[in-house]
Structures are given as structure tokens and as C-alpha cells.
Length: 214
Image (tube, rainbow, N blue to C red; front, side, top):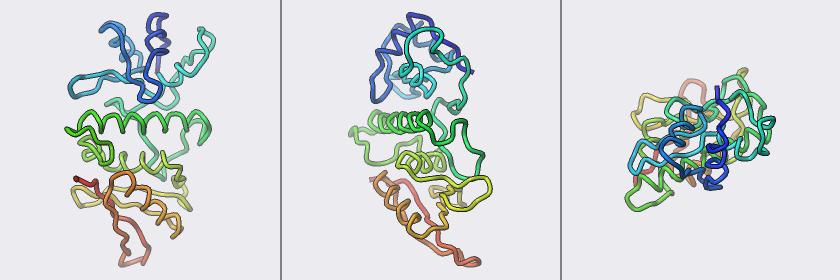
């Protein structure tokens, strides 16, 4: 559930960075936005605050109480980071419509900003520590943000990202060979090392992807 902001909080939301969603305001205003599910506090110094997908929707909506959503249909994860579709789950509310696309785009931009803030050289071309501890979600976000379609609950075409026994690798399955190669190219551009493999029993091709370190 995301609560509507006060007028002062709405002004803070409207003034957020249009790309990263970084916020500026008093501690009370920022804390209030976090409690409403409209912002999250970065866990690393300098502990800046950023809009959640719900906060981005409010910033993009016309001002006025009649325009503010009373309910958050696709809440971010508990740590404040948007949850991308890994494939195989039920469709999210609104499907792949404009609202979902904005959420995914905002989450990807937020992740790039997280890379910039946490890498000593400020680079955004390789995964950060959060991605290494959330491998499946990180890889899925890179794929969804690039426009790849996740598989539905019944399977079929579309990607599926799954954990593997290897400590820093995920498996990406996609029954269409050309789409699988496209997924590989997307992950490589996002800073992942990718190799194509064959499942011994079924002979299905799949990707093994791990975050690039340098």
C-alpha cells in the first residue's frame, strides 16, 4: 500500500531528478516518503533517497488528490529495489502497458545510479554488490529493461531466469534460439559474462551468466 503524499512531500517528489529519481528535502520529508512507500533510502553512504516506482507514478501524474493512486499495484521489494519479472510468474497488474514500462525504466536507471554510487571509479558498465547478492532479479531486470519478454506461467516463448548451484551464476532459458542469443547480447552489454550451454538430458540450449568484475 502506498499512501498519498502531503503537499510538501509532493513538491519534493516533483523536484526529483527526472532520470535517477534522487530526492532532496528535509529529513522529515524524506522519512515520510519512505513510510508511504514512495521513496527508499540507499543503504550506502551518502544514504541518498530515491523514488520507488510508486513515487515515479505520482511524479508523472497531474497534481491534485483525485490524480493520486490510493493503492500501489506493484510494490517494490522490501529493500526498496524494484522486482523485475524472472519468467514463469503470473502477469503483473497492467501487463506490459505504459505504466509497467515506466516502472521498469525507472528501476533500471536507479540500478545504474546505484552502480555509479557504489563503484569507486563511478562506472556503470558492470554490476554492483547488490546485483551480486540478487543475481536472478538483477539479470531479469537487465532483460526486461531491454524489452525482452518473460515467459508466462504456462511456459512457452519468453525468457526464464533461474538460480544455479554455482555461487555467482544464473541460468537463462529461452526456447527460441535467436531470442536466446539476443538475451546473451543484452546481458553482455549490461556487464555480465555469458556462455551458451546445452542441457545434457534435454539437449536444450541455455545461458550461464555471471556478473563481470572488471
